[in-house]
Length: 160
Image (tube, rainbow, N blue to C red; front, side):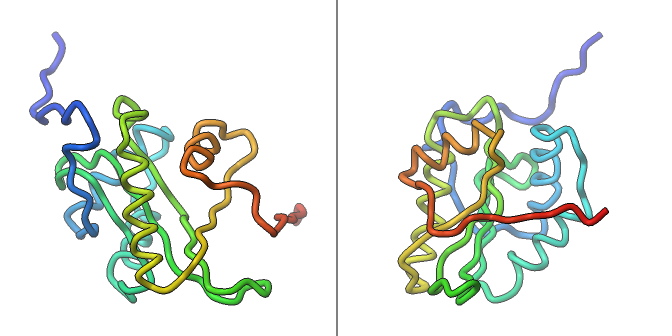
């Protein structure tokens, strides 16, 4: 016999959700949403992200959520970073996630716009992120927001 969910269904559109700064009560919902999408439960990671981006230097670091503490339907995390590799201060997005059944309904775009508004308020003129080459969903999302290749090239090497 299937169990019925006691969680109310999400709104039909991302337009109905309020975007706000994350609270400690939201972290469990962020963990659950990320686990639903990635298949990995990373509780310590998300608690650390909240501590770093949700509690300190809130004029430069932003951890925004959409939904209720019991059910987070989307989140975005970013910060203003200055002068790395000769770059003027820029907004950097480190994470963005929207519940799969709510994608392509505007919630991701609203989260992106909300963090960009905070970057503008912090007097930066550019927003940046990194995307895995094979992550077509996230790449397409950022391109749909007007992002394109920037002036830096990521380099790496194996340490084994």
